[in-house]
Length: 250
Image (cartoon, rainbow, N blue to C red; front, side, top):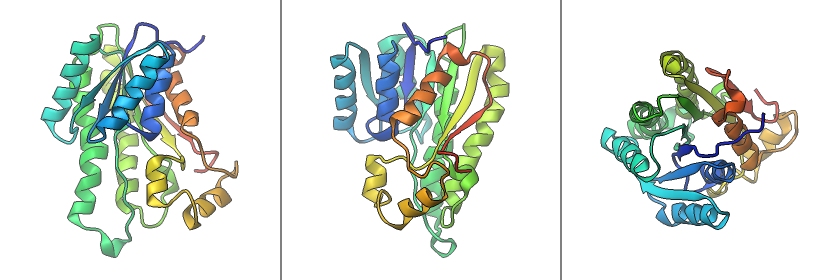
């Protein structure tokens, strides 16, 4: 079965750049009408919408802070107003910071958990109420760190291990509504954020490449394609899974 989303409505959170932007473009290229969520980068979100429109698709940008119930409700309400009931939700919005044990602070902890986990839960809570009666698909963007567990990533790795657990739990809770819930766990992907953090060069990238069986880091399109599969009916009997897209690193 070819992965198609013709006539479907997909929400992609954190879609103004990087992995989220590529997911939005890929889902649109396969027929979905896409709500492009962003927190602060309006110009980035507008560019993604323009890219989709230029390719003949339909998309709209919606600003929302997903760490608060009001933000999640705003996103879902505006998305449904634009394109109708939801078929696909991709929980991609997230943040990462690395710190050794001695430098972990409440701010470091809450900044990551409030978006990576609480934001995901709040958004899913609102969206699940507005899916079509026929159900649909939720794809959580987790991370390979949930099993790789590198040093200095105690809080970030904990958020993503929690996303894996939540994925399995919600797959059971939402199955009666025919809503499938799966996760994609990327390895190191060269994005704007990775470049800004300086991880695309130097010791971090060198270490990742040295321990990855495929010997390289990944590309955004190599994450977007598995998301497309899980979002579409091509994966109709798949739920509760975590798909590691890490070049073989676990």
